[in-house]
Image 1: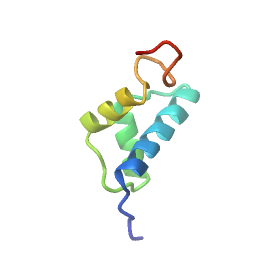
Image 2: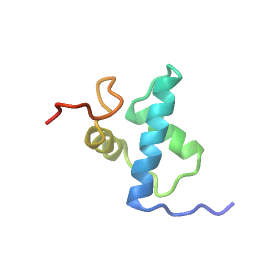
Image 3: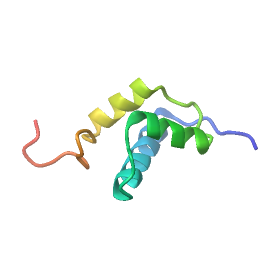
Image 4: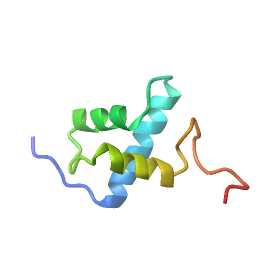
Length: 73
């Protein structure tokens, strides 16, 4: 099976969806777990754990949060 190279926007969307899915199922949802899941799904290019952490931070998905909330700066 040939892997499809994803755009940066698609990678952000995939990271976000995997993170929320893991969170909603009560599973570990850190960068390492997200990267492992992306590898299992054959997502290319596979971002580093640090890149995944940056994506999560920009999306407001850190510290058990599920996104940006009113009043966030």
